Amino acid sequence: MVRDFHIGKETDIGYYVSLITSSFAISQLASALPIGMLSDRIGRRPVVLLGLAVGIISILSFGLSKTYTWAICTKILSGLLDNNIAVLKSMVSELSMGYSETQRARAFSMLQVVFGLGGIVGASLGGYLSDPVRKYPGVFGRGGPITDFLTEFPYFLPCFVAAIIALIGWIAGFLFLEETLVRKKVGHTGQDEEQESLLNNNNNEESEDYQTFGSDDSNNKKKQPSFATLHDVLTPAVIAVCVTYGLAAYQNVFYDELFPTWSATDRETGGLGLNSNEIGTALSFAGMVTLFVQFFMYHRLTGWLGTVRLFRASLLLSIFVFGFQGCVRYLYTGNEDSKWLLWTGLLMSIGLKTLCQTVAMTGSIILVNNAAPRVDALGAINAFSQCCSSAMRALGPASSGFIYSSTIAAVGLPFVIRAHLSWVILSCVAMVTFIVSMQLNPSKYISKRND
Image (cartoon, rainbow, N blue to C red; front, side, top):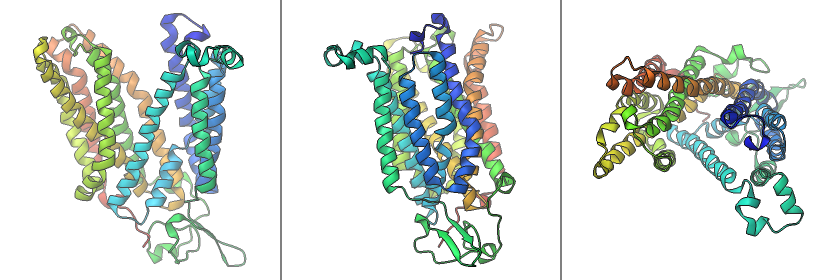
């Protein structure tokens, strides 16, 4: 699409594409906290519906882009207003409140599953439906107004289908989505004005202001401010787990950026020498492991070890997985007969890495929500954690590429060091993340019950 805008040389396309991606990410970073805090004030449901509506408009506008400026403006609009990730995490937390730790883990796992499936479907739509007149002339190349329109706007069709999916989501949300934010106020007449939540249909306890997580009567009797401020909600426990979440996100995106580059690098330079199809197969395997862990394993492991211990165990195992990842190359000598050994070792390492990082990221989200000091602040807290994660995800690709390029080009170092140094650095990052996680006080991250 950017190539068709004819705004620069072929070698500059990557730069312009990255600007579109970065503009969306920076817009999300800027709007996360305001939108999260807005959802704490007016409720989750209206914010989610507004975001979906803006998403429909922005994706249709993006498909109608004829200039680079128009395309980047639509992405900025989408990033600013269609920023529901933190709000949806808050809703899942509120819906699962009062359930067991295992059930709560199951709920957050499903959030990650549908997010991953959405990414797979979205990527497929973009790949298969763009430029349909050229790809499917028997269907869209028969002439007439549709052919003329899709010829002029070759990237509109995938955006249109995505908008239809989003519209179905908006209609379903408008008809069936119920508010999950619990708000109880004392009116001037002394009677309670309640906004009921799905979580408290059978809860008849009353409080003077916003409902808190716990059932401690002494806490409920303390009147809280009408709305939580950042100073109220960013407690040391919240900040500590958000920092850990950011570090976990950094090492995750560092790996995701490093692995394809390292896999494609020639063996003589320190990589595996795989082609694009083989790299795609490896990444597809990682996606399948992610879905398997989220569907069948995470909640069971949580019931066995508990959220905090499982989180720390995944970070500890990551240190060794990253450290030994580079050694997989020694399983392949260049002889095709030994390539099965390479694939065995590669898939095992990818599987372990995916297990660790899936557990770490899902566990981080749960711990962030468990650390919230009051229920009406979940939007702000999840938004703050999203900011920490987004900042690290922005830093990860640039630093990963710089470190790998620098180490491979450092001909003054012995080859065995150059070939492994990037993985060793990533392992050190994982070690720092694990050390930080050990400073978390488990008593601060226990899910509060409403029963």
